[in-house]
Length: 318
Image (cartoon, rainbow, N blue to C red; front, side, top):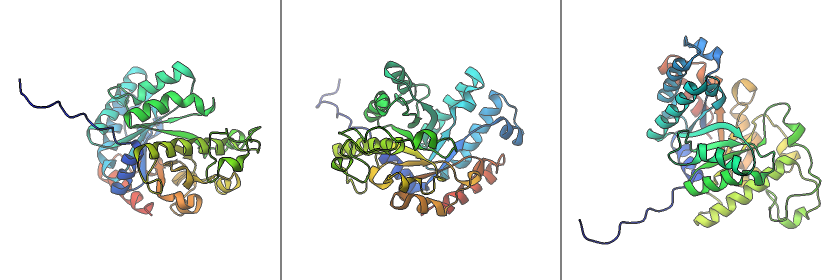
């Protein structure tokens, strides 16, 4: 046995927000959606089965890793193939982790109590078969229902992206709806102060989610002793690039939330590079440009796929 003092105690894991910030600085804002639709597999000349999924996922990872800040596998397209498809998703998440590529698993889970805890354990616990760096979550059982995921993420340097103002046309039915009361007393409105809400003014569901994200991020940043003007929080928001004036109309100051913003809606859905700054203003540096078809349509040739990802990363850079 060797002598000497006790082994050094490892420091806390770097936060997801700061790891993501570093990845964007190194490789740009592009998030490549790994969405193996049956039609896309056919376009690539691959079978619509687990073997086709595996070839597709490996090609996307190999071709795009150098030009994307993260990969975003859509779990549904793997789950539809049953256990063999989920096994391919496990392989993809593990391979990305080995290569130092961040993953945002698009599962949009939302539940309460121990069930939400089970989802968190499945995706955010280190060593879990489906471990990812972050997941998308649905807050429509109340933001507090997400607590098990937020707590586990904080413990292990993981992240969550909360649905707030999405790009689908039906989203406003819920997200623009006004609550009967303003944000809870302990939640500071994004861009405002508790006194401004007075606890009685109407606030949209989307703004309430932004307020909660802001509170979580400012608490995380303060606890870590980081500069609140520069640091990125680990509680992200999902806001569509096609929301237009909705952020202004709903009084949502995205910059004040310190949240990374996962933004679908680019490319085929109509938004372009100019919308990154036009829609998000001072928060544009924290906007993650989520693209799937715009990148994957260049496949299956790996070089063509890599070139497309590189071009898009450059086009969306600030």
